[in-house]
Image 1 (tube, rainbow, N blue to C red):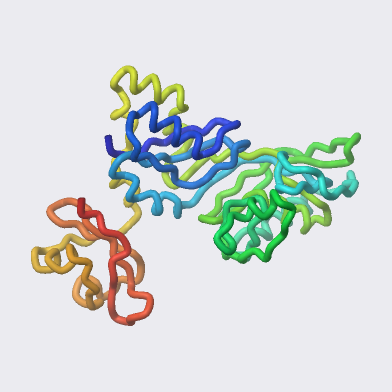
Image 2 (cartoon, rainbow, N blue to C red; image 1 turned 45 degrees about the vertical axis):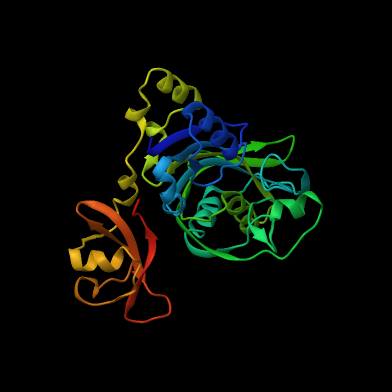
Length: 303
């Protein structure tokens, strides 16, 4: 059983919970997810099975899309609805749509983001959430993120009793983006504490909700011997990559992981490229980071 299973992760379970349950349902240990979703977040979670576990990193690197809700006027420890309130500020009812939309538009593009303390980013060998649970704050590594779109998709709702305001949004972003932190930063740009009050992942790479099965549907497909019909081929991960077919001479070098001069068919290569031999993907090569004029293997797919 080899392939990619687009799973619809339901709320209330971790990504690891999904992997644990799928190992039992599919009766195989070779199962891996492609990017953590918090327990309270539902949505698209591609699962790699069998030989497809070799491509987890490439699915993790793909763009993602989400729909969610931001609430301004309150901040929490976790930057989402699961945390404790740490700040409040009454929201002015005259906050305009133009102000909101302009602030969201300003966050589109490249920017620097500091991951939240309640996240899986490692600092000195420990996950940030391990420090946070002990009440500790450590210096967090900044990361460059890319937001392709960030837009309001509902009218703001003013909650008079709490003096807060909420609205729904849609965002498309590159790898490593914390949407929780986008919500917090958006609130700050409007002059208010904020948190992400709801989130659903609607796309991961080329997979959308329409491609997905729930855990219950996976179990039913297995019971009916229909699971193969729902597995996407491993090669589908690489549809956007340029491919070069190797002749026997180049294959003899590539199969041993040789560093190759950037000449001939590789002369214009400035991004990762897939090598195929006899119709099968065998390796991914990329420009060498330290040796100008050479390319090196990034991943081998020989078995």
